Image (tube, rainbow, N blue to C red; front, side):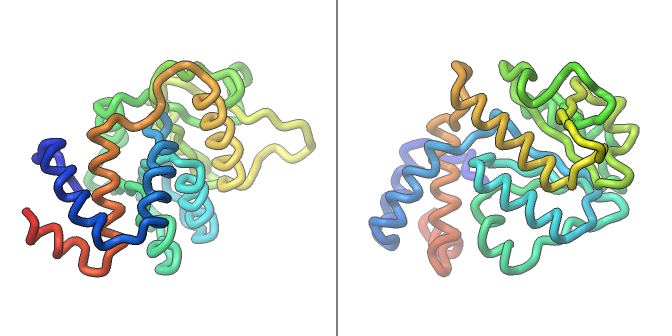
Length: 227
């Protein structure tokens, strides 16, 4: 849902109207959570087919306050169960690319236009880890399905390859576990650092309006009448 055509004053008018239809507790929750939302890090998943992995990554993304999840589909449809869609999925922005209509180069170009450096997780990279990667730039972190991993095309287009250190005999982690480790570590690091990571005021207003529309039955129709 986009509100880019409206001024901050207009968005504030909409927010004040919706606030009359939402409980104070819910409004306080919105105000608290929105301060923890970030677009400094985004999660990107490529060709994830296992529903439990897709669900876990989506929930992890939302729980950690990461606002954007980018989904690349080729052979496999990223399926979001209805129960999850009505929960975690309605609080974050989900963007879908289909490789039939978006080449790897076009996907990377779009993410770079949003300000992201492309980071691919790879077991062969030994130098860069979630614990030492440079966080001065916005990062789009790519995760692939467990067996094939990320496509070679995406690996070749990456700005950075990153490895999760492991100390056992097993050479790989479940993809949802990998996403949890990497994203949690990066979120903790950006919040402990000095780089700006929160949404700006315009982004907060857009997001709050979206949340309000999702929280009220018929909220989108109400907004259309207000416009």
